[in-house]
Length: 420
Ligand SMILES: *Cc1c(COP(=O)(O)O)cnc(C)c1O
Image 1: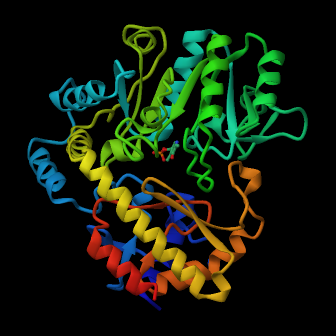
Image 2: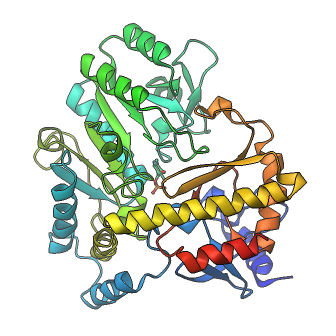
């Protein structure tokens, strides 16, 4: 028995399923999770002292790689000053100013502890501001685990929905309308049917939690227009795409301005942070000056603020140029690897910026229903092969691969070798 195996046995006794977030469990993969001891740069090391090139990167936050030296130095200094005050402090001010100075449509920002919390706040704010109740969400977009977002398409009319988790009330499910990405007709119909009821449309402008479902510019523009026409808000959930596809995320890439944006993951550089941002007019509806309540004991925790700010400070044009370039080389090496093996010949790789996703199939994949049925069956043997070669990808075929600034030309070369 390896050390990972024995730790997993112990974990299952005291933790449901042995993990604190379901996607870490290696479910359906005929192996137990690797217990990670430490990480440095592009690599992680497990408790059995095995080394892996990491493409999971904590599911996105580690845009600079593991234990970046510059961030580490700031974190050490922050630790020495004490790590929570529950009072006003300058560290969150510095992060807030850094972001609002660089992202034009974010006049104000409220910092929270996770992406889920950011989305929860954005939805409550949208309802508070518009005085409307219903939210349109898209099939194939993930917005964290708040009740009203754990909703799947129902069997009836376009837009009708059911809970996708036990424990979510039918009342909550009824306030969320589910539509297909790209379905402009269905969305138009839904706005007509629900006249005056839709508080907001929420979308991952680059859906990256259920495969990588790259959307057309026109579709995002359509959402901007229809929400405006109906006095509803447009919420971009940029918890993955923010600071990754560009500093200003997909809003920056597309030039489309949402009413509210949510951030998470990179904004804390690997420490727990989320954020909601938007115009002063909307944001000032939040407590303590507005009627929409929101709070948090550990919100804007100084350690997380310092980790996030130092991470963001290292993201210049040059950084993104190298990041995207190195990703293209890595994608090429995977493609060559698939071509070289008959049992992988049906696989392809979809990439955007520093994200990539491996899937079977040859036709376009832009909606959840375009994802081939054999995704899981083809994934298990690939995952097994990669982990044996010292390459760690997220242990689930719906998750994307994350490249970091630490995946430099040396690591790219190493990938090539491990795949040959
Ligand atoms: C990860 C993610 C969330 C949830 O963030 P947590 O920090 O896991 O709560 C929400 N929306 C999107 C788009 C995400 O990728």
